[in-house]
Length: 554
Image (tube, rainbow, N blue to C red; front, side, top):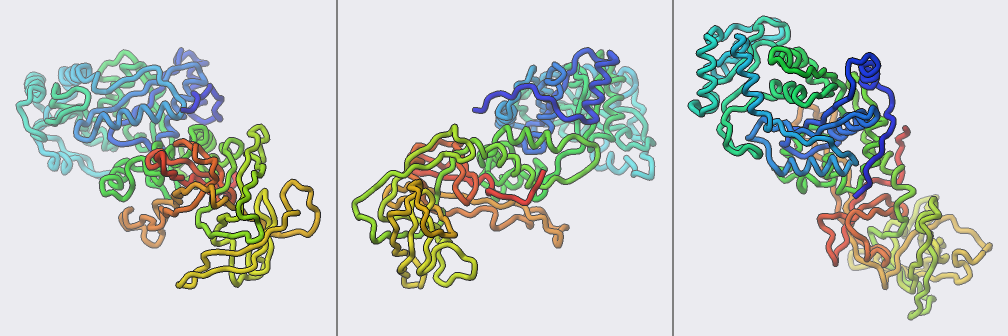
């Protein structure tokens, strides 16, 4: 597990400026933020931005950050999701100061709803969901009052108590805030704040059959915990007047303030837990942690590091304007993080056997190889070399085009950290595919020998056939295609059929000790992670994290 992050100075942004002013003016004495996910799915890269923002903001100002589960919907929530969220936040390098559940406040929320009823600011409505929707009005037309809006305080108290006692079926009664059905803000047109749901809750069991709506519960939770800066995404901006109304009219002793920022949108990426769950449920992917998924667990399994995700989150910044971030930017940060950390080794993904006909049949020699040319502190290792090796199939062409500098009949190349070899002959199978090359080597051209004779233009990588370890390589492309020609299609219709390619190859024999989550740079191929789900004691599986090069520039 990665070490915990230390306090960093985050780039300036409008929320940080607000916090600065609040502290200077004495409006707040200690910053308290929170990360409040609903446990109805696994966290994704968009949540990582919010996690980093809340935790790092509080850290910088020596404040506190709570991890709070907004578990007000028993139908969709599960302990599995709770545990996965806790694991993801910890893996990203953050430690919460308080761990809370909205469900722990259900009694307090119920009592605050009673406060509203007694003040004449909430009423029990018998209308169906469709009837309430039809009478809410539109953006240009006001809503119409419910026929039950003027019930007496006593009647509403009685009905609300009976709702809690379980007398009504799902949907038969709701509790609505009594605000203004003609408000230009539809969120203030008597929103529902409690509904009847007879369902088992992951935390409270069957203790409750009425549950607060998120928009009512969330401000109460912030106020109960003393949150000073309630940071959320822009889709909640229209909810802010109701947020403030709840805190004020429920007479909460602490008054939090809500601030909105633009959510993260990535190219070729689904950023909806509902859609991600659909991918999992329909088995379009290998679970929530499929390396093609933008979930934190999926990115972790693919091989992304917490440091790369934190650096990415800081770089994209915090703004109020909507924008789409190129997913290649995230790739850039994992390359930057791994380039000095990852062992550079050789793996052949599409093997073609090469027999070096003039090399002694029983000879094996050990050649020196740097573990990372850019980081000498990583030292060196020795790799075996013998008469038979594997190279990549596309490092040989029978009839090459101009400026092809790899192997072809009569041409000579350098084997990385080994010798010059020259192709003399090849063997084809019954289908006409080249399956074996016959080459000769020049003993005087050994790497490190000081050979200064002729030059060759091509250098290719290889692995020793006698000692090579079989390995599976999983190559990934974006799961979702940004299809401008089919914008109206279901996102499932834009799934990339080539998002996963599984191939069988070989790696150096020193890789037999590789452990899940070990990361390597395979020459010319990219950065790879040992897959923790499918790797076993006798089977190595590598996930492609990212290719070596990108056109993206920060």
